[in-house]
Image 1 (cartoon, protein in one colour):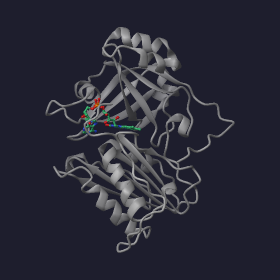
Image 2 (cartoon, protein in one colour):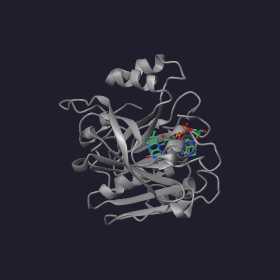
Image 3 (cartoon, rainbow, N blue to C red):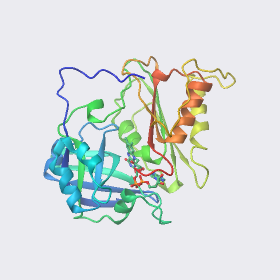
Image 4 (cartoon, rainbow, N blue to C red):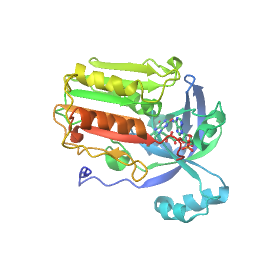
Length: 313
Ligand SMILES: Cc1cc2nc3c(=O)[nH]c(=O)nc-3n(C[C@H](O)[C@H](O)[C@H](O)COP(=O)(O)OP(=O)(O)OC[C@H]3O[C@@H](n4cnc5c(N)ncnc54)[C@H](O)[C@@H]3O)c2cc1C
């Protein structure tokens, strides 16, 4: 799938490092903690809203962090060349809310694996974070919108039926997207599979928008989300329950060979647009169901593997 052409006149942002301090920590539910970051540079960072992503950079060794930050926007070759014991852990997160006037951003982090000692560095860091902790963020150096800024949500103006679906890692993006939707004549359905009922949060939704929470309560990942997406497509008239047809567009993916990140051209969708994100094997199942079984055009759906079970980083 081709990537959308970027708007020409726009100056691409540099992705640069921002020093940030934890200004607040709030437990949102059993699986989520909200961390508010502040820092002098953050007034110009992460203003796009929607599913704006950035990198949280956690040092293993201060010398490694210094080497990386000193390289500025040319950090990546240095990162690849570093011995593992120096290389900072870098993880991707979503800006849940930005208050540029206060130079603050909020990030909602899933506390996976913390209770049973299997957490990765980001979840471990988040579980222990207290105001005053220092961290480094990597993000665009100026406000803007679109893929160069790390924003994938791009429903075409003609799309009147929008579907968002994902697991807990997609909750911050989906909440930010639905809260920012203009009150337009669109039908918007969001389906969110979360670990527990206590993870459900109240949202101020525009008219025409429905959010359905699907607490797993120990069930297998995707076991609620995949059928719920199928049912929603039928309710919305995008698919017919009894009709299964092989999509001409469908080729299976091997997650061991390639990440699942398939985002349509901005103008590819017609009346329907979907944004799906979460654990890669579940998103792969959704892709098979939508494109393979139900014949939904690939060009109408963004499929994004946000993380992969059993794989760090
Ligand atoms: C564009 C984008 C936006 C994202 N936004 C957010 C966000 O706003 N909030 C958020 O919490 N996450 C978000 N994620 C997902 C996050 O990057 C991953 O969950 C990340 O792997 C967590 O890093 P870690 O250091 O805690 O664990 P890792 O070191 O990466 O992994 C350690 C172990 O934990 C497992 N693991 C990792 N993540 C999870 C999980 N969520 N649940 C259960 N097991 C897991 C891994 O499979 C591995 O076995 C986003 C990802 C992308 C690509």
